[in-house]
Amino acid sequence: MKQICEMCGRSIEKPEISFRIKIEMFADPSPPEFTEEDLERDFAAEMAELIEQMRRTDPREAEEEVYESYLFTVCADCRKKVHEYLRRQHLPFEDM
Image 1 (cartoon, rainbow, N blue to C red):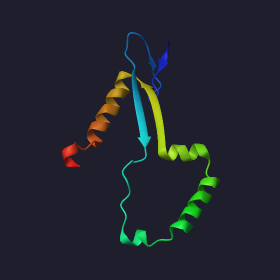
Image 2 (cartoon, rainbow, N blue to C red):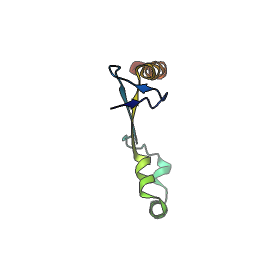
Image 3 (cartoon, one colour):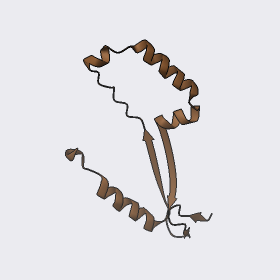
Image 4 (cartoon, rainbow, N blue to C red):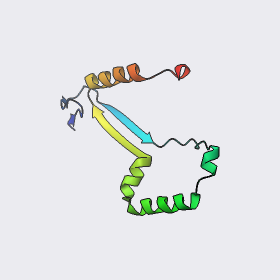
């Protein structure tokens, strides 16, 4: 089966190895922090507005705000470029 690099468009011929890059984006599961001002808000009115917003929102759009997943096929050269970019951008955990 002929594969095409989704970054550069080059054909990936055997015996060259292709690579898969999977990206997952999802909402942070950490609970929100509340202040004293938050506790004094009109929750009933805010919930009514939130429910109305949900009625107007496309279900697929709502799902994408919470979770998205992508899978790319890339050649060895593009894999190296992505790897180097991510290494430059990523902060080690001890620096966070």
